[in-house]
Length: 280
Image 1 (cartoon, rainbow, N blue to C red):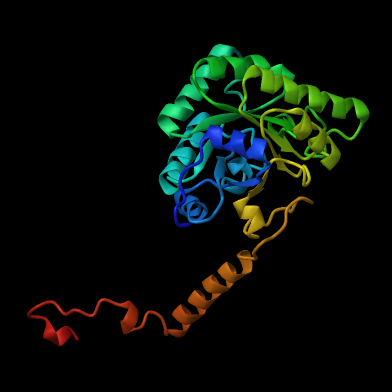
Image 2 (cartoon, one colour):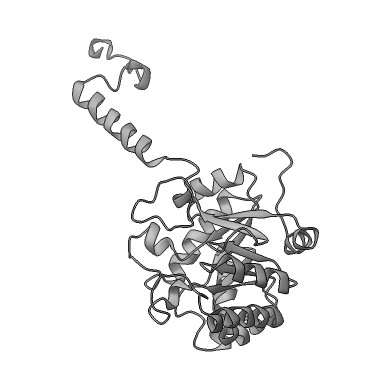
Protein backbone atom coordinates (compact mmCIF):
# COMPACT_ATOMS: atom_id res chain seq x y z
CA UNK A 1 0.00 0.00 0.00
CA UNK A 2 1.12 3.57 -0.63
CA UNK A 3 2.69 4.78 2.61
CA UNK A 4 0.30 6.95 4.58
CA UNK A 5 -2.70 6.26 2.33
CA UNK A 6 -6.01 6.87 4.02
CA UNK A 7 -9.54 6.72 2.74
CA UNK A 8 -10.79 9.92 1.11
CA UNK A 9 -14.10 11.47 2.10
CA UNK A 10 -16.75 13.30 0.10
CA UNK A 11 -15.35 16.51 1.57
CA UNK A 12 -11.89 15.62 0.22
CA UNK A 13 -13.22 15.25 -3.33
CA UNK A 14 -15.01 18.59 -3.04
CA UNK A 15 -11.78 20.17 -1.79
CA UNK A 16 -9.90 18.68 -4.75
CA UNK A 17 -12.43 20.35 -7.04
CA UNK A 18 -11.93 23.71 -5.35
CA UNK A 19 -8.13 23.39 -5.37
CA UNK A 20 -7.95 22.11 -8.95
CA UNK A 21 -6.39 18.79 -7.86
CA UNK A 22 -7.08 15.92 -10.24
CA UNK A 23 -7.88 12.44 -8.93
CA UNK A 24 -8.50 8.92 -10.25
CA UNK A 25 -11.02 6.18 -9.76
CA UNK A 26 -11.06 2.63 -11.02
CA UNK A 27 -13.73 -0.01 -11.60
CA UNK A 28 -13.30 -3.49 -10.15
CA UNK A 29 -15.51 -6.18 -8.70
CA UNK A 30 -13.62 -8.56 -6.38
CA UNK A 31 -11.47 -8.81 -3.28
CA UNK A 32 -8.16 -9.52 -5.01
CA UNK A 33 -8.42 -6.75 -7.59
CA UNK A 34 -9.63 -4.34 -4.92
CA UNK A 35 -6.55 -5.14 -2.87
CA UNK A 36 -4.37 -4.21 -5.83
CA UNK A 37 -6.17 -0.88 -6.18
CA UNK A 38 -5.85 -0.32 -2.44
CA UNK A 39 -2.06 -0.67 -2.74
CA UNK A 40 -2.02 2.02 -5.44
CA UNK A 41 -2.44 5.80 -5.35
CA UNK A 42 -6.01 5.51 -6.71
CA UNK A 43 -8.50 7.33 -4.48
CA UNK A 44 -11.83 5.72 -5.46
CA UNK A 45 -13.29 2.42 -6.67
CA UNK A 46 -16.61 2.01 -8.44
CA UNK A 47 -18.13 -1.43 -8.07
CA UNK A 48 -20.03 -1.12 -11.31
CA UNK A 49 -22.95 -3.00 -12.78
CA UNK A 50 -20.61 -3.43 -15.75
CA UNK A 51 -19.82 -6.68 -13.98
CA UNK A 52 -22.63 -7.90 -16.24
CA UNK A 53 -20.21 -7.52 -19.15
CA UNK A 54 -16.84 -8.14 -17.53
CA UNK A 55 -17.49 -10.78 -14.87
CA UNK A 56 -20.62 -12.69 -15.87
CA UNK A 57 -20.50 -12.28 -19.66
CA UNK A 58 -24.15 -11.20 -19.90
CA UNK A 59 -23.26 -8.72 -22.61
CA UNK A 60 -25.05 -5.83 -20.88
CA UNK A 61 -25.79 -4.45 -17.44
CA UNK A 62 -29.53 -5.17 -17.60
CA UNK A 63 -29.54 -8.68 -16.05
CA UNK A 64 -27.47 -7.59 -13.04
CA UNK A 65 -29.49 -7.87 -9.81
CA UNK A 66 -29.24 -6.02 -6.53
CA UNK A 67 -28.14 -9.20 -4.75
CA UNK A 68 -25.31 -9.59 -7.27
CA UNK A 69 -24.21 -6.01 -6.71
CA UNK A 70 -24.21 -6.39 -2.93
CA UNK A 71 -22.19 -9.61 -3.20
CA UNK A 72 -19.46 -7.87 -5.21
CA UNK A 73 -19.53 -4.62 -3.22
CA UNK A 74 -18.93 -6.56 0.02
CA UNK A 75 -15.88 -8.24 -1.52
CA UNK A 76 -14.40 -4.96 -2.76
CA UNK A 77 -15.01 -3.21 0.57
CA UNK A 78 -13.06 -5.98 2.32
CA UNK A 79 -10.24 -5.78 -0.21
CA UNK A 80 -9.83 -1.99 -0.21
CA UNK A 81 -10.25 -0.57 3.28
CA UNK A 82 -8.23 2.55 2.42
CA UNK A 83 -10.14 3.45 -0.75
CA UNK A 84 -13.48 5.25 -1.14
CA UNK A 85 -16.05 2.76 -2.52
CA UNK A 86 -18.97 3.63 -4.82
CA UNK A 87 -21.74 1.05 -5.08
CA UNK A 88 -23.76 0.98 -8.31
CA UNK A 89 -27.55 0.78 -8.22
CA UNK A 90 -28.54 -1.76 -10.90
CA UNK A 91 -31.30 -1.61 -13.50
CA UNK A 92 -34.85 -1.78 -12.19
CA UNK A 93 -33.98 -1.09 -8.55
CA UNK A 94 -34.71 2.66 -8.38
CA UNK A 95 -36.81 3.73 -11.37
CA UNK A 96 -40.23 2.75 -9.96
CA UNK A 97 -40.46 5.20 -7.07
CA UNK A 98 -38.53 7.26 -4.57
CA UNK A 99 -39.36 4.65 -1.94
CA UNK A 100 -37.86 1.87 -4.06
CA UNK A 101 -34.75 3.99 -4.66
CA UNK A 102 -34.24 4.64 -0.95
CA UNK A 103 -34.74 0.98 -0.07
CA UNK A 104 -32.19 -0.06 -2.68
CA UNK A 105 -29.67 2.51 -1.47
CA UNK A 106 -30.24 1.37 2.12
CA UNK A 107 -29.39 -2.22 1.21
CA UNK A 108 -26.27 -1.26 -0.74
CA UNK A 109 -24.97 0.81 2.17
CA UNK A 110 -26.02 -1.52 4.98
CA UNK A 111 -25.29 -4.92 3.41
CA UNK A 112 -22.61 -3.94 0.92
CA UNK A 113 -20.78 -1.43 3.08
CA UNK A 114 -19.99 1.09 0.34
CA UNK A 115 -19.36 4.77 1.05
CA UNK A 116 -22.03 6.01 -1.35
CA UNK A 117 -24.32 4.86 -4.17
CA UNK A 118 -24.39 5.75 -7.86
CA UNK A 119 -27.37 5.85 -10.17
CA UNK A 120 -27.85 6.69 -13.82
CA UNK A 121 -29.96 9.57 -15.10
CA UNK A 122 -30.11 13.35 -15.14
CA UNK A 123 -33.07 15.65 -14.51
CA UNK A 124 -35.46 12.70 -14.79
CA UNK A 125 -33.78 11.06 -11.81
CA UNK A 126 -33.34 14.21 -9.72
CA UNK A 127 -36.32 13.28 -7.46
CA UNK A 128 -34.73 9.87 -6.77
CA UNK A 129 -31.39 11.49 -5.95
CA UNK A 130 -33.02 14.00 -3.60
CA UNK A 131 -34.96 11.27 -1.81
CA UNK A 132 -31.82 9.18 -1.25
CA UNK A 133 -29.80 12.19 -0.10
CA UNK A 134 -32.62 13.24 2.22
CA UNK A 135 -32.44 9.73 3.69
CA UNK A 136 -28.81 10.43 4.64
CA UNK A 137 -27.08 8.52 1.85
CA UNK A 138 -24.47 10.17 -0.40
CA UNK A 139 -25.18 9.91 -4.14
CA UNK A 140 -22.97 10.10 -7.20
CA UNK A 141 -25.02 10.87 -10.30
CA UNK A 142 -24.23 9.54 -13.80
CA UNK A 143 -25.06 11.29 -17.07
CA UNK A 144 -24.02 11.04 -20.71
CA UNK A 145 -23.82 7.46 -21.89
CA UNK A 146 -25.98 5.56 -19.42
CA UNK A 147 -25.62 1.85 -20.23
CA UNK A 148 -28.80 0.82 -18.42
CA UNK A 149 -30.82 2.87 -20.93
CA UNK A 150 -28.64 2.12 -23.96
CA UNK A 151 -31.57 0.77 -25.97
CA UNK A 152 -33.51 3.99 -25.41
CA UNK A 153 -30.64 6.32 -26.38
CA UNK A 154 -29.63 4.48 -29.54
CA UNK A 155 -26.93 2.17 -28.23
CA UNK A 156 -23.54 2.42 -26.57
CA UNK A 157 -22.28 5.52 -28.34
CA UNK A 158 -21.07 9.07 -27.83
CA UNK A 159 -23.67 11.38 -26.31
CA UNK A 160 -24.08 15.15 -26.65
CA UNK A 161 -22.83 15.62 -30.22
CA UNK A 162 -25.72 17.86 -31.30
CA UNK A 163 -26.30 21.29 -29.73
CA UNK A 164 -29.61 20.33 -28.16
CA UNK A 165 -28.14 17.15 -26.74
CA UNK A 166 -25.14 19.03 -25.34
CA UNK A 167 -27.42 21.61 -23.74
CA UNK A 168 -29.47 18.80 -22.21
CA UNK A 169 -26.35 17.30 -20.61
CA UNK A 170 -25.53 20.64 -18.99
CA UNK A 171 -29.13 20.88 -17.74
CA UNK A 172 -28.91 17.32 -16.40
CA UNK A 173 -25.68 18.10 -14.57
CA UNK A 174 -27.21 21.15 -12.91
CA UNK A 175 -30.31 19.17 -11.98
CA UNK A 176 -28.42 16.40 -10.21
CA UNK A 177 -26.28 18.97 -8.41
CA UNK A 178 -29.43 20.76 -7.23
CA UNK A 179 -30.87 17.41 -6.11
CA UNK A 180 -27.92 16.93 -3.78
CA UNK A 181 -25.48 14.66 -5.63
CA UNK A 182 -21.94 15.14 -4.30
CA UNK A 183 -20.39 14.33 -7.71
CA UNK A 184 -21.43 13.35 -11.21
CA UNK A 185 -19.95 10.74 -13.52
CA UNK A 186 -19.64 12.07 -17.08
CA UNK A 187 -19.49 9.16 -19.51
CA UNK A 188 -18.66 9.17 -23.21
CA UNK A 189 -19.28 12.75 -24.28
CA UNK A 190 -17.28 15.34 -26.26
CA UNK A 191 -14.46 16.91 -24.28
CA UNK A 192 -15.87 20.41 -24.78
CA UNK A 193 -19.21 19.37 -23.29
CA UNK A 194 -17.57 17.82 -20.23
CA UNK A 195 -15.40 20.93 -19.91
CA UNK A 196 -18.48 23.17 -19.92
CA UNK A 197 -20.15 20.99 -17.29
CA UNK A 198 -17.14 20.93 -14.99
CA UNK A 199 -16.71 24.71 -15.26
CA UNK A 200 -20.41 25.20 -14.50
CA UNK A 201 -20.79 22.85 -11.54
CA UNK A 202 -19.77 23.39 -7.93
CA UNK A 203 -19.46 19.62 -7.43
CA UNK A 204 -16.81 17.39 -9.07
CA UNK A 205 -17.37 16.01 -12.55
CA UNK A 206 -15.60 12.67 -12.89
CA UNK A 207 -15.07 11.52 -16.44
CA UNK A 208 -14.83 8.25 -18.29
CA UNK A 209 -14.45 8.85 -21.99
CA UNK A 210 -15.18 12.54 -21.44
CA UNK A 211 -11.80 14.09 -22.22
CA UNK A 212 -9.06 15.81 -20.23
CA UNK A 213 -10.97 18.63 -18.55
CA UNK A 214 -12.84 16.61 -15.92
CA UNK A 215 -12.08 16.90 -12.21
CA UNK A 216 -11.33 13.18 -11.97
CA UNK A 217 -10.66 10.35 -14.43
CA UNK A 218 -11.99 6.80 -14.35
CA UNK A 219 -11.01 3.61 -16.14
CA UNK A 220 -12.03 0.00 -15.64
CA UNK A 221 -9.14 -1.97 -14.12
CA UNK A 222 -9.86 -4.90 -16.46
CA UNK A 223 -9.74 -2.52 -19.45
CA UNK A 224 -6.66 -0.51 -18.54
CA UNK A 225 -4.62 -3.67 -17.90
CA UNK A 226 -5.71 -5.42 -21.09
CA UNK A 227 -7.50 -8.23 -19.23
CA UNK A 228 -10.95 -7.69 -20.76
CA UNK A 229 -10.74 -8.72 -24.39
CA UNK A 230 -14.28 -8.50 -25.79
CA UNK A 231 -13.93 -4.90 -27.00
CA UNK A 232 -11.78 -1.80 -26.43
CA UNK A 233 -13.53 1.59 -26.38
CA UNK A 234 -11.75 4.55 -27.96
CA UNK A 235 -11.16 6.17 -24.56
CA UNK A 236 -9.38 3.17 -23.03
CA UNK A 237 -5.60 3.21 -22.79
CA UNK A 238 -3.82 -0.01 -21.89
CA UNK A 239 -1.39 0.95 -19.15
CA UNK A 240 -0.35 -2.72 -19.02
CA UNK A 241 -0.87 -5.83 -21.13
CA UNK A 242 -1.63 -8.59 -18.64
CA UNK A 243 -3.89 -10.91 -20.64
CA UNK A 244 -1.25 -12.64 -22.75
CA UNK A 245 1.23 -13.12 -19.86
CA UNK A 246 -1.58 -14.87 -17.99
CA UNK A 247 -2.33 -17.07 -21.00
CA UNK A 248 1.38 -17.88 -21.23
CA UNK A 249 1.48 -18.78 -17.54
CA UNK A 250 -1.38 -21.23 -18.07
CA UNK A 251 0.33 -22.71 -21.13
CA UNK A 252 3.62 -23.07 -19.23
CA UNK A 253 1.76 -24.82 -16.42
CA UNK A 254 0.14 -27.17 -18.94
CA UNK A 255 3.45 -27.94 -20.67
CA UNK A 256 5.26 -28.75 -17.42
CA UNK A 257 2.46 -30.99 -16.15
CA UNK A 258 2.30 -32.90 -19.43
CA UNK A 259 6.10 -33.23 -19.49
CA UNK A 260 6.13 -34.45 -15.89
CA UNK A 261 8.38 -31.62 -14.70
CA UNK A 262 5.80 -30.09 -12.34
CA UNK A 263 5.37 -30.50 -9.46
CA UNK A 264 8.96 -31.10 -8.31
CA UNK A 265 9.88 -31.88 -4.67
CA UNK A 266 10.19 -28.11 -4.14
CA UNK A 267 6.45 -27.79 -4.69
CA UNK A 268 5.42 -30.99 -2.88
CA UNK A 269 4.91 -32.04 0.75
CA UNK A 270 7.69 -34.58 1.31
CA UNK A 271 6.99 -35.74 4.87
CA UNK A 272 6.61 -39.52 5.33
CA UNK A 273 4.07 -40.74 7.91
CA UNK A 274 5.69 -42.47 10.87
CA UNK A 275 5.88 -46.20 10.28
CA UNK A 276 5.61 -45.92 6.49
CA UNK A 277 9.24 -45.27 5.57
CA UNK A 278 8.94 -47.89 2.84
CA UNK A 279 6.55 -45.53 1.02
CA UNK A 280 9.42 -43.23 0.13
